[in-house]
Image 1 (cartoon, rainbow, N blue to C red):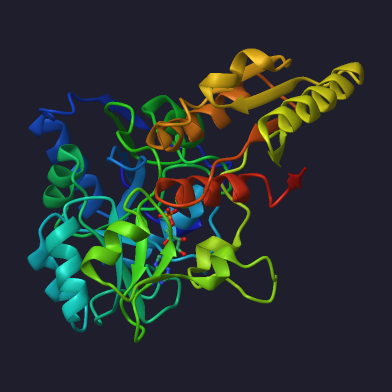
Image 2 (cartoon, protein in one colour):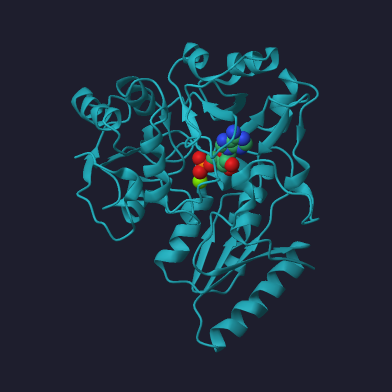
Length: 363
Ligand code: AMP
Ligand code: MG
């Protein structure tokens, strides 16, 4: 079941992947125990969380972390998030818990918030991509918590997709990407939130958001009034790099070419319809991503609604499913409406901009 040398797994070494479906409210203890054993022996298990599905290995075992990078095809300087199932587990893996970090943990854990600490010697550099800091999250999902406990308390888990593809928000997407590359895939429900965690760096003097997510700047500011968004995320100056190593990569991308179109509704609709018309004439398959209020106004082979404009959480919840549907339908060119920044809109636009490789048309 577990590999002798997980670090050497290449894309073409097919392994036998066990696939288990569980009841998210009552995960079968037998399945969890078996999955926990796989992780304790250095193997890899993909599992549901409330954000997106994770690809888990023992965070304190350098070979398991190396195996995660190999299975995903992930650049090895892009650190992994360590998942715990009780706040007390922090003591073993961090050097100290700054006051502000304690406040964040009290308010938002378990939940979709990742906090960066100075790491202790217990955490191998293979897990942290060579950094002396470690990212930690305490997820709220029951299956995730049970698995972490059954695995010894520390699971390193990035999103359970092949690097560069949209993060998986349902079990079948994990199977598409990772069947034959990991020991076990546990399928539960669709991810409740559907967007990766908010990441906050507590190792610098002032707290900084390195990746926007479901927990917003506004909510975090209630606990830590001085908190700001990493300038590298908002600046269009390519010399100002994001501080989270992973945020510099093109990411979350569908296979088709994605363009964001900004402007007033009328101009956006006529521009997109002109572009999809031109593409169709060339024999390309076209897709449009729009708010539900306007899906009827576009012409394309696939028009995907991301919810009403008044429900930005819905857009965040659906975005990865929509991008994967574009792939399933073999769409070549995709145009999308944008969303206003602020609240969850910041996280949504961050992921969309990266998926589009920063290709934005402003009308
Ligand atoms: P993923 O788990 O695939 O959603 O990616 C994890 C994200 O967390 C990446 O963007 C990483 O760069 C970021 N991250 C993990 N550990 C650290 C750390 N120690 N310092 C800064 N960013 C981190
Ligand atoms: Mg990811």
